[in-house]
Image 1 (spheres, one colour):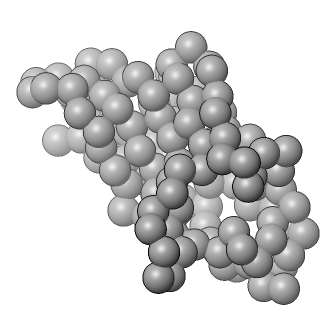
Image 2 (cartoon, rainbow, N blue to C red):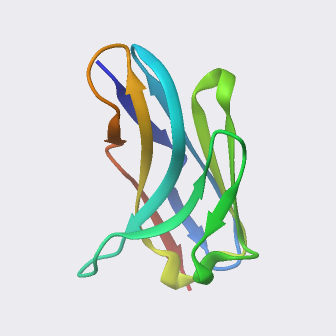
Length: 120
């Protein structure tokens, strides 16, 4: 059974930094794109950043220049370094991975979410 487990959320003051991690475990044949999404209270889930297995990245305009996504393919882990955090970054952050499990079709998997709260 494939699982994505996030860690690293918490409470931070505006201007501070946090680093999120997400590790995929289980019988995994290959992972394509990994990414981070977030959902603030009363709002729809939105894309934050994605990274392909070759290292190409994409960011939401609202986080460009402040957030950095990276991955360690050997560890099936994706990271999100968040700097210069703002109150509007407050949300639940979800890890996503498009992967081929050891059996079954390729599809998207999601983590359980980790809360990020930025105090102003």
